[in-house]
Length: 183
Figure 1: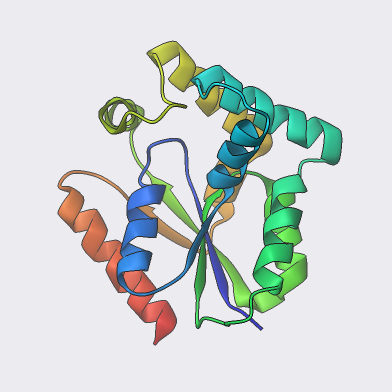
Figure 2: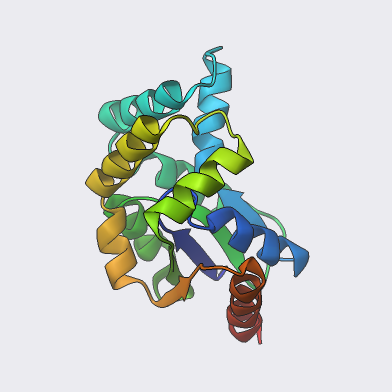
């Protein structure tokens, strides 16, 4: 059975940085957000901040709050090559966590990444993703994700990292956590 670590946190907290660190250590990373981005592309939609949020909400409304988790868990379970640890980037809801816990039991854990809102907004502007927009868009995204239960996930996480300046400190802490989990 595969061991899985899901990363949660509010937008631009450092989930991608954590995933990059995992990749640099040779760990496979799967992204919940990529699933939404793929759906946006599949539907031939323009990728602006409101479209990504709308598509994510439509998927959940049509198929349940756990739709992305079920799809991703099926894909992970179908993998031929079983890694020592697999990272899921972007856990956003309690229903998603419950699917993963049911699938992998003690082989599943959550890491929460905390960062201040002003730091996260600046980082969101610097990275320039299609789903990143104005301060109003950013705040709406926070509210939407908190509504899905990311705040509860962060409170109940098995591991917690704080992403403050300098970024090198966060990277070192992420590396230490990942190395400890693969030892």
